[in-house]
Image (cartoon, rainbow, N blue to C red; front, side, top):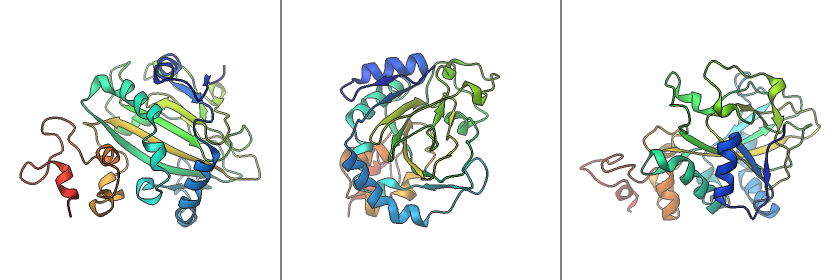
Amino acid sequence: MQVQELTNTTTSEDVVAALQQDGCVIVRTLVIESLMDAIHDELEPFIAASKNGADAFAGFRTQRTGSLVARSRSFHQLALHPLVLDTAARVLGPYCQKFQLHLTQAIKIWPGEPAQALHCDQLIYDPFRFPKGMECEAHTIWALTDFTEENGATRVIPGSHKWEDNHLPSPEETVAAVMPKGSVLFFTGSVYHGGGTNRSQEPRIAVQLGYNLGWLRQEENQYLAVPPAIARHLPEKLQSLIGYSKGGYALGYFGDVQHPKEALKE
C-alpha cells in the first residue's frame, strides 16, 4: 500500500474523500520551492538555536522549533492556504462553530536519528477517547526539503484512523510519505504515523501545521507564542485562527465579556 497522491490542482472535496478513506493523502508541489526556501531562511536562526529532543520520542537528533507564526512571515501563506483551510473546515466543521490553529513546528531530523515511535496526535487528549469517526484534529506536514525513504520521510499507516483503540501499530504496517519539497501530507489526528529513520547524510526538514476544534485546548499555546504585541499586526483571518476569536457565543471572552480582538488594540 502507498499513500494516495493528488495533484496541486485538486479540491478540498478530493482531499477530504481521501482522508475519509485512508486518513492521509499527499498533495504534490502545492506551493513553489521559493516559498519553502523563504520560510527556511526566516526560520534558520531559530532552528539553529533549538535544542535536540530530551527523550527518544522527541528525538535525540531532532530539533523542534515552534512559534512559527511570529517567526516567519512567509509561513503565513501555509497557515492561510485556501486548500488547507477548506479541508480543515470540512473535517472539523461538523463538530465546532470555529476551528483554530493547534500547533506550528519546524522539525529537523538529522542523520542517524532512528524512527520515531508510532502514535496518533489526538492522544494528546488521553485518556479521553473521541467517538469513532469524529475527528478533533486536521494536520499537515509540509516538505521543506525533499522527503525520501533514506532521509526519514514521515511514515504513516493508511486506514489506521478506523482502528479500534486496542489495535496497536507495528513498523511493518507503515509506508513512507515520499514527496518533493513544497508538497504536503494531510492527515487526521486519529492516524498512526511517526518520523522515519534518517539513513542519509543530510537533515530532513518539515513544517507541521495543525488545526483543532475551537472548544479544545491548543497543543501550542498560541497566546504565548504570538502575544498581542505581535498578533495585532497579523492578517485578521490569522488572528482569528490562532485564537483571538470566540469559539462560540461566550467561549473565549476576557475581562468584562470582551471579544478577544479587543486585546489587540493599541
